[in-house]
Length: 353
Picture 1 (tube, rainbow, N blue to C red):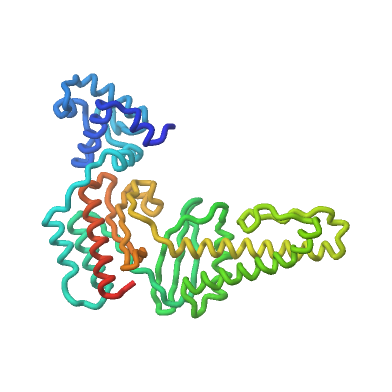
Picture 2 (cartoon, rainbow, N blue to C red):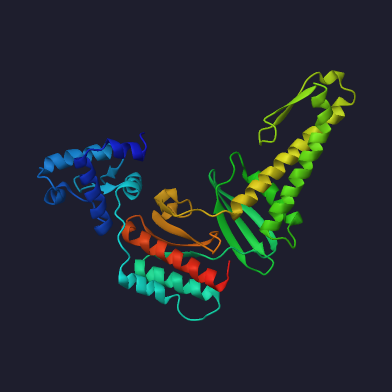
């Protein structure tokens, strides 16, 4: 099927207007929008039959759906995505909404948790949705780490810190990883985690990778120089040492077993380094609609989320709103964006993160 951006380019002005009015009507009322309603709203005079034909074409393209026979149309998840990406008009933050968000930042309470609790309550009240507040990432020593697969393209890292705090972070695992390989990575990290932060662990793994690489190069140098072997994709994840004439090598089997062992160890540590990097990284401003959001796909909800940053422009947390897929995206996006910027400035001013 054609992707959303290509479909958008293929629609004529009439189809775009019908589609936009169906989505806006649905987001406002939650009800299917019928052809008779649209004939009263369209900028050009059209019959109900003409509008129905356009709606049928949009349904064929996968942008609209008819939940009941002759009861109008609603946007599909795909249609909502196209609307958000290409047609949505972002409204200005109202003075009333701005005032309510600003009020959460008042006072001299030194507790960051209290500040973020107030932010969460304000977001829920203003948007009538559930708020999501991810606190600044912890840099305390780690007591325990665990990776949990949520599907082929989502995983969760559970971090238990020495001070008793627990954090859950969602990330996209490297291709080809399995629940078993994630358990092995966690077991390895837990064996060396005591007293170390995530950053410390990454540096430690980096040092071990460099050491294994040096040992591997040293062992393979004679083979390469004698023409018995050559590197393919040297230094990359897919690197191989191609060996020729193995039977002529004195002690060749022993050397090759050692090289094979070093390769396996190097590959495993590179995977672990990838896991640690992904666990630390944050995502940009995102809108997740329905099943695009793996954590909330079963409830048919949407998530509008924005990161907040410290004075070094490093992402340290995020705020967001969770609600039904018919969220008023145009209003909520600026609210979430403004709140995230305000929290970032406030925490930077306090020297947190």
